[in-house]
Length: 304
Image (cartoon, rainbow, N blue to C red; front, side):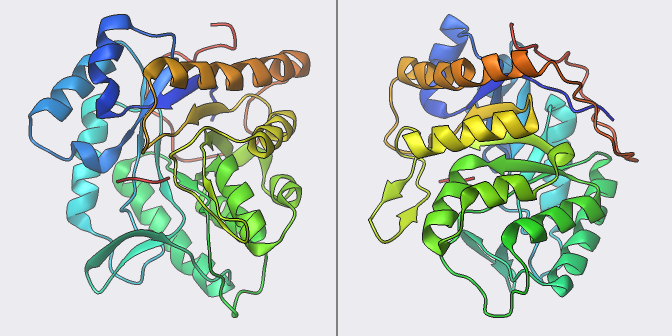
């Protein structure tokens, strides 16, 4: 299958629905929080359908709980598939984490022990989800604040094993790498160099809150310089990767978000142009993206 570059996108948030429809801004695609649209009707779906007529849409979830020991939530998967069938997204993604235990949703993205047992457990569940949806999913690396004593490999080795064995793709969140590197005292460049380039399908960029001894992924501020620097390295390592900026609190004007998105475009496009490399994945997959939307060329309470 081909690794399609869709350009540069933004999170679709209700604050901007009307402005997007009125101005049709120069954004290549939008990403939704999937669970916000698990409804039968009303304004959320009205605006989603209207914006979907103008832009490609990616679906990003926060409640798949792929790492939990709870059974996979069949009702959740039914809603996810129904929404995907409705809007034909360019991506369906969630997080490499667990959120529920004993049937109770924590509404948080909780880390996993990096062990062989965890890998086997998660891969089996990813296989079920992809078979049910009939397409590959993307899983995102977390920002984390605790670690498990039983972990016997690095996070990037763990992530790499999961996506390779499950034949899924990686949503590589650059800010999350920076946050976790600061909190756990590792070199973020080791992380970037440690994941399989052919699996990196999407990037997230976001801001965070810095408390000195630790930092928290809050999505309430602009992207900081060290994260931009990591993104530049990612562009050099992975080539053209669909990139979006997340903002979920302390919402700026839409023009400010557009300016930040253009910073990502300005940074990455010259690198992509110089590479002039194929973006065909050297992997064979039994899953295929079903979107009929053409790729966009270089010229042309929810945290994730």
